[in-house]
Length: 577
Ligand SMILES: [Zn+2]
Image (cartoon, rainbow, N blue to C red; front, side):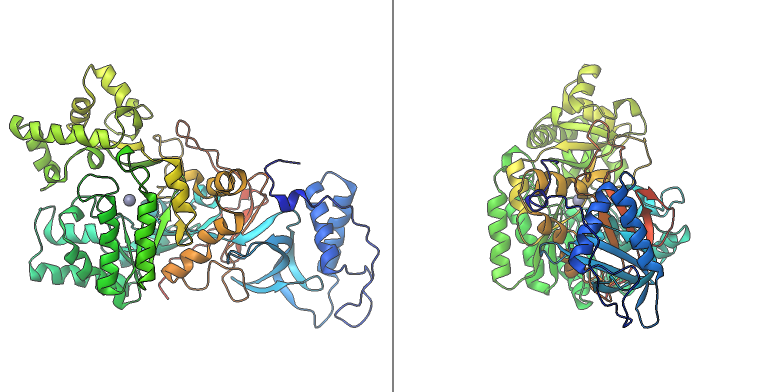
């Protein structure tokens, strides 16, 4: 038996079930094939699941399940689908329990002992785990899902993700009605919830200038947030780390978050500083707390981290700040991806924000001005040190020169015969490379992950297969968290991990009727083999789908059946409750 199996599974020896019991059926008479008790059926299914297609017991069990499906009689409940005998992790954080799940249409109709019920289709989940579909609350997949070749979202489904939130980091389109139409145009493999982004709104109203909005401009920005919320957005996303959000003061974010709060929405923020670039990590987290204190909005410190050696070990202090805010009565949460590397643009990582004011053309003029360039250069030297040096920065995508993709800034600089910052400047003159940046410490990752208020999020994009060298989180986040941190290292336990990706995000973002296994909830369900569940994408070879999802249902329809994509596009664009 696999050493990675949880103790509860190891202690339960395979039992060859002997099918001899008889029992009254719900129809009043004795059933011809004798229906098994709940407990014995679970065991039977477990055996059949382990040996399906290989041994006689698997065949016998399968035949009996099929027989049960067709021996109908009037008065017995019937479903479109029954998922039978799985270990149910219902998303609440409770330990698994055996239950059958009956699906009718797009909803879960029953949870419990359905051994006497009928169904058009019965799936044997013996030996497998059943959980609500995973919810990814920080993704950059919106622009991929609205293209015909990627609308199915296969890298997401392979991880068990059935719902994503788009437009994080203050980004995405301003016109969410148009985004909704674009997303639906080619169909969707997963459900999508939208956020309305601060940075794009600021950019629309005042461009990339480094100044405060006038009162009239602030009113325009508030109107755009209101329009987004009325279109069903789940909340405001902000990113005062990035230009032009970086030019805003806290008061501006407060004014906009107040509009989101009016609608019961959230404020998810890529904080102003995850390191010690400007105001420092702790004050940056405090800014999110301030916005919640001023507006009552639910605040989310997104992809929570301590970025770079200068702030390694700060996780404890960040956790204390959030705990204190919660003790004060403020709803502060976080989300996190389970990797030691982040991903961003090289310019965001190295350039001082003042050099980016006015946009790309203004930046190029500054790079060509020797006096200003000297100031930029000295800031870049410090920022590179914050990131731990040029060996910790790996190029992800650079259209003007794809040969650098997958290589480090140090390697590229060596090839060019330049110092790292000068090589970076040479690249900025050609374009804007995106990077993977190795800057986190395992202890901090674990500390953040253990918190009850930390959700799971990938921060991933939806790459074209085999294009560029994207961060592996786009393919592996959810199975990786379960495999590495729950099963192998025991940093958290399995129900806690599942909760962080199901009921917790649904509660935080008020996503209606998802994220839990209960009658009435939408049938977004994953059925997985814990022994096989793993991420296979690695930094040097990221284009690999995760493994271990046996079935994935979106709105009651199979997106993955028996480990294969069905091509069905059952996803929807969701709206806030
Ligand atoms: Zn971000």
